[in-house]
View (cartoon, rainbow, N blue to C red):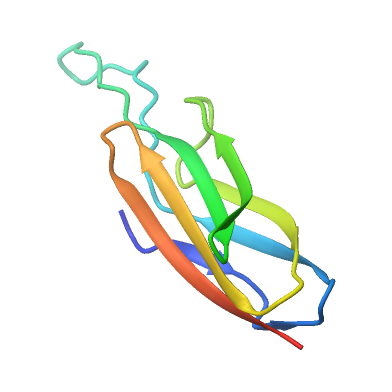
Length: 106
């Protein structure tokens, strides 16, 4: 897995609603395919995404096997103060991929 790609504006005005885009590389194996020998390839998907701003929850979702590889999420958040967005993707193996982005609010 590679480093997540996150787009958060560097600056905003208090009360602005901003667009956040998050992409992470992950093969999202559904557990329904078979290998060359006919064995089922074990399921390994990102099953949870969470975003926090200054340690307060902003957005979260459960992800199902039907989601494509390299899941892309876009959502909005209202910002009232400067701070740090923290992102976390959790997969079936318990691996957590984390990233952070700061925003300055004037």
